[in-house]
Length: 143
Image 1 (cartoon, one colour):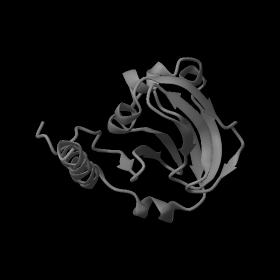
Image 2: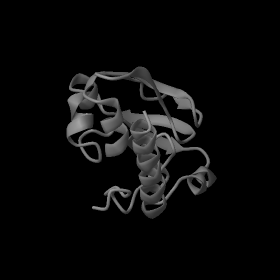
Image 3: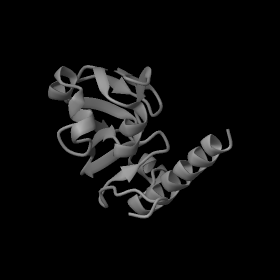
Image 4: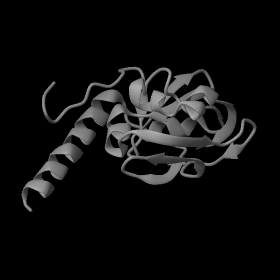
C-alpha cells in the first residue's frame, strides 16, 4: 500500500467524517472506516440510538469513547434506523478489530436515495483520506 492510500472495500461508499455506507436496496449498513477508528484509538464505550429512530444526515446517532477521543457518532444518511449492532455496543472493540464486518454500527432505511450521490466511492475516498494523512504528517513534522 502506498503511503498516501488506504485499503477500503470497493463496494462501499464513504463520507468525509470517515463513515462507510454499504447499500443493499433501500437499506444501508453504516460503520466507521478503519482509518476513522484508527484515529480514535481503542474504542472503550459505544452507545447507539434505538431501532425506530428517525435520523437526518449529520445528526447524532450515538456516543463513543476511546483512548484518544470522546464524542458523538453522526449519520451520513437520512432515514429510519431499522437495526443496530448490539454486539458492538456490548463489545466496542469489534469496531477496532473488524470495522467493515462485525464492527458495523447501524442499519438505516434510506429516506432519500439522492443522498447517496453525495458520498465518495472507494477510489475517491482513498485519495482524499490519503491526502489527509499526508497533511497530518507534514503538520506534525513541522513542529
